[in-house]
Image (cartoon, rainbow, N blue to C red; front, side):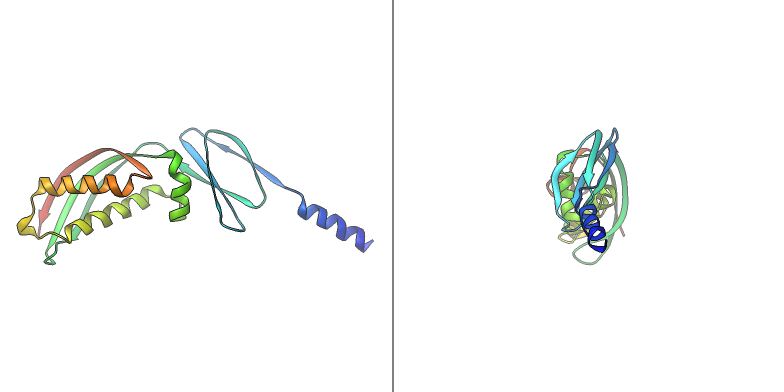
Length: 166
């Protein structure tokens, strides 16, 4: 009796249990192995899917995003500045598995915000307020953002507003 129960338990544990899930419009999903942490290369688009019991699903929103920025930064000489600009961007759907693999989050907007602020602050650290031209500063930022984030988002529009020196 004990042996039969043990065999049934082993069969039950070894059987492939699956779960169903739906990916909706303006979403994509990425799966990863819950045991190994390995992220699938495939990005799942709108539709119904099944996954095994050892897999987990993360969902990304793919609709275009708008973000207004206003934050302080430091120049090379430790003087302060304030910058304001906005961007419109769209996630690159096919790269979201790589994004999840690198950042271990589905919160693309927050990660984009952190990366953009970091990039702007890195650029400003090479300048002083005496040798800065706002137009060139914004052009440098726009080029750098396109370079830093090009794998994960398309920047649809960059709108410079102002740079203030304190």
